[in-house]
Length: 477
Image (cartoon, rainbow, N blue to C red; front, top):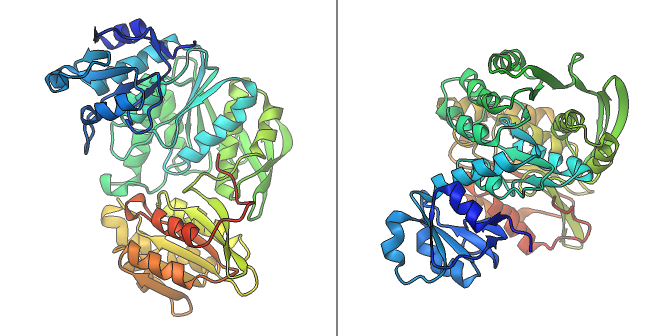
């Protein structure tokens, strides 16, 4: 059997002490007692809401071969007979194991951050690098203080390419994580108004994102969005951090990986990309100009890693939008169908505009409507009212005539829209969910988007529960 880690290696890397008769090795690492697989190690991390030590019994019942627990919690685990590694602090020990994983790896590593598009770009990188070797990337959006070390610790020793997403909503969050990851290439998708309530200005957001340069290995590179107004600042900051190789992507004439032309529809897009001085035509299986722009960054990584560019171009045709981030479903309703665009994972002004553009590019069937179902953009702070009001412009420019809203902040957009737009407002997500389910008709195209805190995923779930998905619904990556 191939172990992810031998128990001896794990124990040494974490500075722990074994109790019982541990197995020779483990097949994986889990922090969720519900989804752990037999042969894996359960790390009993103490989070903000729950303590993993309270779920060791469930982890054992589900097949955990080894427990990693804190010294201070040991007395409460007196009856547990499953082998354990005892450490000072479980999350800190996971971090030490993550560092060991990076030290033993010969993989080429890329780290991605940005205000918008991190997870989608991570998934594109997973897809375009796969034809060239064994890829390891985070599941879901494991991009925070536990998700990044967990992803690193899970990286098999024989990985060829490691893809890491690093997020933040405060300063000094990216810095320690990127120093664990030590990427050969760092990518910043864009700088936009996200988590603005935690910062005094966009300049501070740019500075926080630029922390990603601090972990780039000597001789490494950065790939930056040349169309973003912070390109010059990021380029200079990268150089000051010792990143000698700066590359750019975008539509700008001087971009190294240039999007020369774009032709999109509701199902995908065709782009003409200039790479190494040659113009190539590429089909992308997911719709949206923002997807196409970030595909240029992904192709840039392929080039810098010396991976197979031709195979990467073909792979882009196989990608699909990720659940909660543009995934498209056709649902059966009343002898016809409706189209559901699921953008429910999160929202900020830039991603709202991109989602509205997706809706505008989608053609309703006869008798149907384009409907934007929007909820609050959270963490906007003192800028919230203005930023919500300003969504009226993109909606009107896109010709969206039906807007259904929920959330306290969305009252600003409700009041900013003219009478020519059919606006429905409900104060809470459950109220809006009930209204949506009862008022959709065959032919409609719905785009559902809000910050995660409003739980607009429940609107998506309610629609799928009431109107069955048709067989050619897009598969998720």
